Image (tube, rainbow, N blue to C red):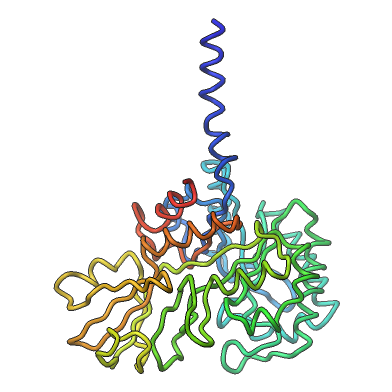
Length: 360
């Protein structure tokens, strides 16, 4: 009888032990409808950040009844996946045109924080992620930015934490480049108040670039090149807690056209053509497509080049995710996040690689 009880005790303790041992976050941003989102392996995620809710005047709300229904359905998924946190995000690359003016006002900041807390209580939402691109520096073309944004962002964080208390999650998406690190955030004031910072260490060579490069590389090795490693080291040197740092990954490729056949298209002139979701890689980069795969050992990043069509592609894949998760484990960071869920495969995709890499 004692042996049977001991066996049952060990059996039931195994999942808990595994959860404690693998205490890394795997955070997925998601858009779209709940019917699509729930087709993905949500059991492998720790946080799902639904993007993006609306700010009407200074009140957090939904764009429409469809989005409200989606959030309700996502929150209901916690019954199936009790370890999953459901968060919402505001902003995005083109979604924060009003942020500089709105959050300059103490009244608006406080009302936004208060209405956010009210919404979370009503819908059982676990937290908010602020995706202001970017405080104090230029982001989306034409959007206002001001040096005062840096302090106003801090005050916004303070207002949110005051209203949300310590039971709700508060995070923000940070630009994965040094200009943002140095000018947008008061790290000493902000980091004690947030649960994590989600580093957008992708699109480091973006759609406006006229020279190709790695858009989501782990290590930099060229002058003025950005990378995940550079951001992480910058934060660690300033005593940001390692467990609050989340490294970003991309579920998509960026493709440039008119790229000459020099260095297999890497660091060559070109024009941005399109994005390709990871779920479509096997078709777009098929054996008959003319693309050839390359691995940059220094950057720990893959790329493809089509000599005939003069197309260059930069992306994350299984190999680069393994490199990133090994880096996260080595530096004892908080985990990995990605944009975005529906671009992955519904089974056996990069989320699976993330879980496997962080469980080692």
